[in-house]
Image (cartoon, rainbow, N blue to C red; front, side):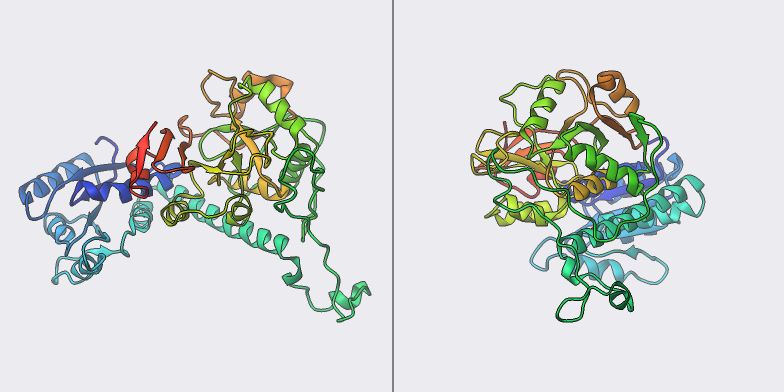
Amino acid sequence: MSGSKIGIIMGSRSDWNIVERALNAYRNLDLPCTVTIASAHRTPEAVRKWVEEVEKAGVEVIIAVAGMAAALPGVVASHTLLPVIGVPVESGSLSGHDALYSMVQMPPGVPVATVGINGVKNALILALHVLAIKYPEFKKRLKTFRKAQSAKVDLDRNSLIRDNPRYALIPAGKEKASGKKTTAGKKKIPQIEIIDAVSLQGESAQPLKKPSPVAKSPVRKIAGKKRVLKLDPVNPEYDIIEKTADLILEGGIVAIPTDTVYGLACDSTNPGAVEKLYSLKGREDAKPIPVLIDGMRTFSRLVRGVPPEVQLMLEELWPGALTVVFSKPATMLSAVSPEPSLGIRIPDSTIALSVISMVARPLAVTSANPSGRPPATSAGEVEDYFGGSVNLIIDGGEMRGNAVSTVISVTQEPYTLLREGVLSFDTIKGYLKDLRRL
């Protein structure tokens, strides 16, 4: 428990699934947590002893997670002067509302700050707010988190207008200044070419044209032909993202940071580029390469008839370190997967999402390492592995650890865990009851 600042206590083992999902979602924040299980009614002495232990160890905020008319947060609060955050868990016939009312109705003098049902993520961020009052490092992490949230909203907004240009706002006076009007008197907006079902079918399809961004920011010319370009992982520069997209659209191989490790990326609809990627990686031809996409709109074009429990899992765990293998027509994206299945992931990385959005099609991405070697977690490691064999390396900083994404197949039931990575078997099992290990 040395170094832990946030203590998490759960009423039962079943609460761990929701706690683990939240911790994995905020893995990049590197939250200093310690966890335990103790019951307010069955093991009250264990609760008291744990509170004493974490106080001595330096914990400064406690999160208490419980369901079924939960008394745990109040019992914890009665044993400490540390701030306690209660998380009601959805359980029983009242779906967690009994636990919610129990936590917010603490008697005077025993305060518990309570978040929404299953709100472990908000509890963790609230705990970080408390720690940020005292520790500059936590304040810095919180600011980075806020910037990342803002960047994702900007990305979603730009993606929305790119896919629906007819709804873009035209500032007053622009129509008159351009002199180009439609019959309705409005300025024509360039049509954006998007991926459709036809363009993803087979290798004979013509390569898609590069999409035109709706609103292009001023581009700063990049001096020279540097192979490694440093990029802010929270607020990536537009011109570098555009340069990266250009290289990919021209059939190049680019190394980019994701939310797990660095990856080698190319245009999944370009068979020649995919062939180069296989050769560079030293990957077996029969081993499919997953694709990264930037949102559910592209996903809906690739996959149909998603089971409700799988859809719920995707809504909770995407963007994130989860690759899901779905059934597909044999001819669709056959360069990356000649099999009737395709691995798909939405990464939780502003850089990766920005590049995918700019390219406007799925990227074939595999970890940046020769087959059989450890995945690269920094731009330097990518360069050591591949030197000048890649067209560009985007340096988005060092990844925390070298854990890869978890891979599951939902092509048939029972669903199958193909690789356990950042997300554990138990976490996925919390969504897909009919899940087995390979």
